Length: 287
Image (cartoon, rainbow, N blue to C red; front, side, top):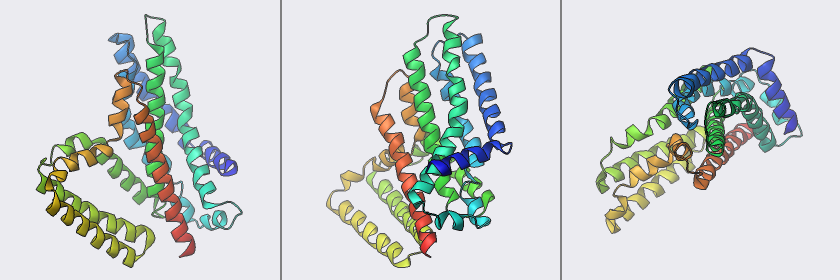
């Protein structure tokens, strides 16, 4: 795993990608830090971090699109898959390499609260808790991008799909308001989500039987539950969509709440999408 991690990390700095990424992150964070804290005088560092979460929509597709898609296109993934390393080690190494590149600007941003404290009183615990949550949020975005990169050999398609998925997650608060909280509205939304899950299963695993079985069982369970107790569906789609709101848990840290559930949430997102990435590669390996 460490070998893959070092190769991945070094690869970003043998080209301009890593340097441009770090420069971009520092420029954007520096602009907001100057505007919010040095000029406006806000003492809470999390405000500027909350304002720059949009950068993940830009940098995540750029960082992750080449991770696995390029390996597939150049057929170098076959060398990795035939090596003594397990698929889990390969995926873990690539993710750690990405996280390492992202950690560089975050570590440099750790100096910002210290700079701010020289001008007045700053809650450093709150500031560094926000930085921890910011780093975990970024890692969750990277895990999602890595999974999408494993689905295609085209870097452009991987980048576009990653942007679309992350944009939907970023706009999840607004998307929730589009749905009524009635039971029937939630039922229809879940019906479409089950169909989308079937399409995803077929695309990733190329297993028609499993996709159809999932659809039949999923839709049957939904209609049975609705007929037995429809009140279970009232506001259910909002609760589900809230789980896809990546930045929602980060806001707790900005507000001064050290949310253990938020940390568990981000670690769970990372674990789930790394697991899905492993399954995607395993399917391609034996197909």
